[in-house]
Amino acid sequence: MWSDISCTEIEDILMKEVSPKRFQHCLSTAETCLRLNGIFETGFDDRLCRATGLLHDLARDWNKEKLKDYVIAHSIQVEKEEWDNYKLLHAPVGGYLSRQMGFPEESQIAIRFHTLGSISMGPLGAILFAADYLEPHRTFLTDEQRQGYFRQDSLEAVCLMILDAQLEHFKTKGMKEAAITTVLHCYLREGGKL
View (cartoon, rainbow, N blue to C red):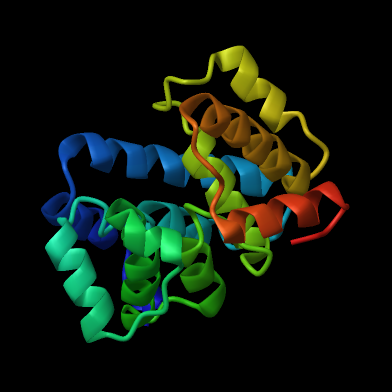
């Protein structure tokens, strides 16, 4: 069970699986999860928030062959965009790995959808989705911009701001949102709750 695994043990596992830079991102994402949990008073156990934030990129440094082989071997359902861009496969693989470690379903789902988002990612998923984008090592945001996200009145509003910013970025690169992301984007624009 996940409750038998300390955050220090998760950090030890991470250090063996990810680069030092990715490890720092995971630590920072975990701290940002705690911050969002406090700001929006979601009531999640701080240890669960921190552990979910730490674990989210466990498979991020795996290569294409390892990720695709793992998905096939474990019959993990993935989105077309994830299969086409293998780097995105770390999210469904990470969700599966968290299940193997006995994490609760809300944590598994949060990790599973932390890259593309989903209307079924729930409040913990919204925390992780936002924390992964907002953590201080992300240099595409200024501190002032980051604070603007933290001043929103709901996690849904934070996620919508992130999706709007990502869509603008995609347009400049001639890219499209993933289908599952577009569904989430429309859902939040219409006032949907996670």
